[in-house]
Length: 91
Image 1 (cartoon, one colour):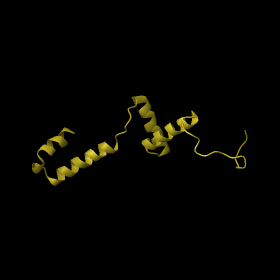
Image 2 (cartoon, rainbow, N blue to C red):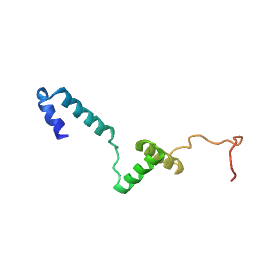
Image 3 (cartoon, rainbow, N blue to C red):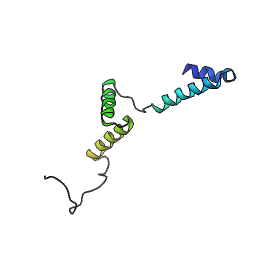
Image 4 (cartoon, helix red, strand yellow):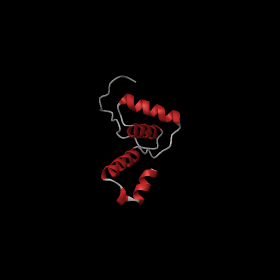
């Protein structure tokens, strides 16, 4: 990040190739910003599970949080099952 700030102060001296590299690195860092801070064990578990499920970690976290909110009645059930719906299995 320091390199990017320093180059911004002296942009006329930077080559186009160097600017491209720094901008791509910055974009990659921004893309990987999660928005929430997790302890290392939780982050590792989510990273492993996301890889196992072939799902991006932000999508996995959104699904987990959404399911928890529905299960604990903080959000409504997305679709109600009516009495005439066919279901598999037994209760």
